[in-house]
Image (cartoon, rainbow, N blue to C red; front, top):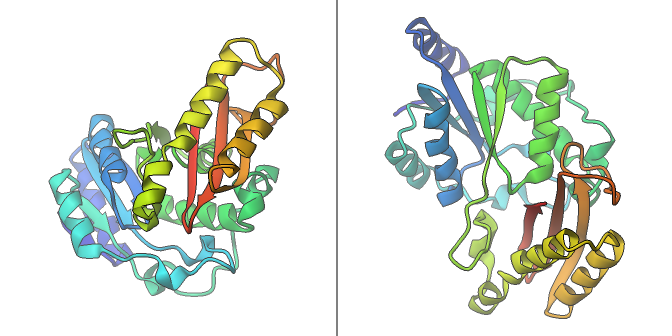
Length: 278
């Protein structure tokens, strides 16, 4: 695996890949990798000839109450996992590499950026969209992969690529889960043993909502309210549980098909995200 921090050098290396007639798949990350990330890398190999990953902790997507400096940096361990997964190139820029001057031009997503996760984390999706746009311009992949666990992020980026007419296929990687159903996440490491035993309740709660909807229950507000109250009665602090349309995360009505239940809830210190498609 070749590692680059310099943009010009990475572009030169990837130009040679294209000259060989090979396609490029790209999977951006912030590092601190787990099996979910590695699954994306392996899926990437199914979509293109050459896999490029990036590791960059993006300051722009951190809110004022989120500690950018405390985000885990595990670069050596991450590199070892990426090599084992067959990643050919790793882009690991510094802040000076990616933001040599203040980033005054930004990608401003539509109203969806202020809903759900956006309501809880103001400015988050602006920061995500801006850095991903820069990474896309640098790597110029044929395919880019993002995990479905961050469902709203995937939707924002997929629609960004569509509206800017970027020649990139966006692939949503299925959420990788532990044996008990908990979605893998870097945040899981902050759970105490007791909290870890409780954590699968979130996924089970979403499964119960899906089953109720499939059984004909269209009182979506009541379903989500009861689910939230049930979680909170077991020590959670729920930010939202909501049934939405998959294509735009707009509020769902009884006549809509292709739905998704999205949730964010705090268990102890970590704030866990999950979703399930209907």
